[in-house]
Length: 312
Image 1: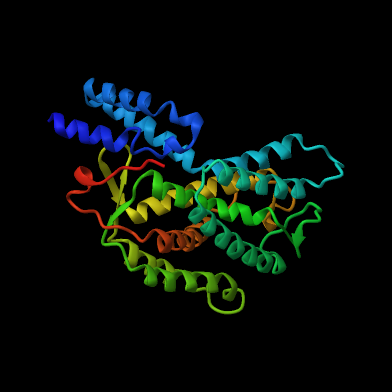
Image 2: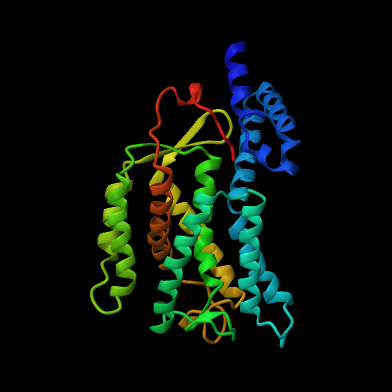
């Protein structure tokens, strides 16, 4: 038993925690590890409470980029001066670039994650240019930093999804059983992306895409480590929950008048629940990009005993 505890402490202690890479957090590594051990010693209720709080903190850390972007939307909606020399949208572009640079400079984000974010930024911006050109939604405010009808800060909103998935992958040490081949997910993602454009001119094949996603991802289980051991849930459920939170965030974004759908022309209304399906499909593209870089690892019986846990 003593050997097991020592191994677990080593896996989740200062030697295994990437928080050591960031000075403001490094001093708390040992303290937090001791807090967890004390909670575990107090019994199941305290252990559950500790893991629940730890899960929430990790989720908040994974959402850092997206949360900052959402906070900027709300803050500029409430406080940005009307008639300012710098348009609100242009300020958002500059602020988003500054956040990205600072996250890299302070090693809150890896180069690999930044690559995924950049790719998804480009993917999202191209789609935005097309969607605004056909009237799917509009950006009503003036700006200089834009392409066509799309202010450049919008690509960072898509990038926030990629950032969240990439950071979760590291923070929770993802493992999988029955994960579909990444190249097959790549084909599905390509079909999803093409359909976002093609359905304006031909049949909308989203029902087929949903069915394909169910067949591919439905059997897969994702294992995620909050502290010492991996918990698990169906991957499909996890992706649906993330899509739901993105839909909530989109409602906040439209409330701040950052963009508007046709039905919101005369005042804010809730975004239709049908958009949840679109976000699920779009998120699959982002998930596939992250999976292509991280190469999903299988969950093996020894993983909770022998592997290093790096809560980065």
